Structures are given as C-alpha cells and as structure tokens.
Amino acid sequence: MTTTRTLAASAAEFIARLESLAKREDRAALAALRRGLGKPPGTVAEMAPYVEPAFDGAPDEAYIVASLFGLHPHHYRAERQVRRGFGSDLRPLRGGAGEEDPGVVRRFTALLDAHREAVPDHLRHLVALLRSRKGELPIDYLQLFYDLRDWDDPGRHVQKRWASGFWGWTPSEGGPAAPNPDDSTNNDSDA
Picture 1: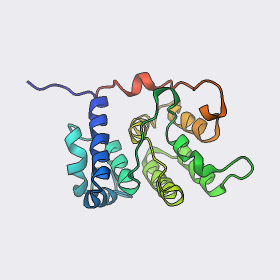
Picture 2: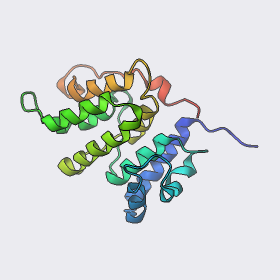
Picture 3: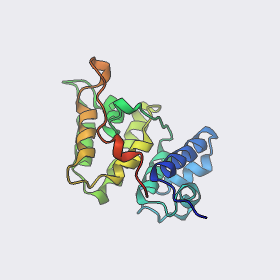
Picture 4: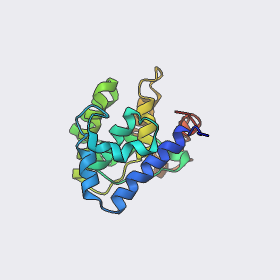
C-alpha cells in the first residue's frame, strides 16, 4: 500500500538532506547542486540524486532551492511567529537608514517585480552577494521553497512579506513579534 506524503513532509526531508550535505562538507555534492545555477530547473542530471529522493517528482522550486543551497549552504529555520522570508535574510545587506546600499536595494526591488521565470536568476545574484559580503548569514531555505511555490499568487503576499522583512519593522526593534499569516497554508499542503 502506498501512502501519500504531504508537501510539508517532503519539503522538510529535502531540506534535511541538504543540511546533511553541508554538515558532512560534501564538496562534490554541493558542486553538483551549484551546476543548476542559471539553468532551467530539473535539467542538470547531477542534481537529481540530491533532490528527487524526498519527492515523487520534485517540483521546480526544489531544484531552485537546491542550486542556491549549493552556492550558500547555510540554513536556519525561523521561529513561526517571526518568519518573514528572504527579505529578512537580506536585511543585513541593506544597510541603515540614510546609508542603504543602492546596489542591494536595486537588486532586491528587481526581484520583487520579477516574473516567475526570472526569479531564480535574481535570487542567484542576491544569494551570491549575501555569501560574499556576510559569508555566514543563513537563509531559511524551507520558507524560500514555500515562497517560490506561492510566487504567482494574485495577492502578491510573498512579495509583500519579503518587502516588510527587508524594509519594515523587526522584533529586535521592540514590541510583539509579527505573526506570519501564511503559516496555515505553507506547512500542511499536499503535493
């Protein structure tokens, strides 16, 4: 008897597999994942052994996340109540008020305005920038996976949350933590 796995279980297993590659410092595997950068998702055969086992037919988002992880293998999982996505991960590169890095702001704004087909390329450039400038700053790759799945939502909730994380209020600035309105849909969806 075959059981249907939830997308949440598959995605969590996938991220755990990626993390194990980083912990083992498996340079060959990370290089295989990096080969997917700039290529259409699923077209680099060397990536399949690291992506496909967690899914029954891996979605494009898994290949995108895997290639970015190969470039910058530092993952963290944010607490539920403060999760904001990739914008928050990039915030340290933005700089302070009046001293914003115009290149980072320009690239991030282009990402927010990008059509789905262009998103992986914009992400690649920003992750490379994150890696080069702040080396050890991690990315919530599990949330990135879910956000890529929801990129084309007509309400643009992913882009709004990322913008809030990049330019907006953070819990470290005082006050209660902002809840993530998308938690109920992200973690229990079926594939």
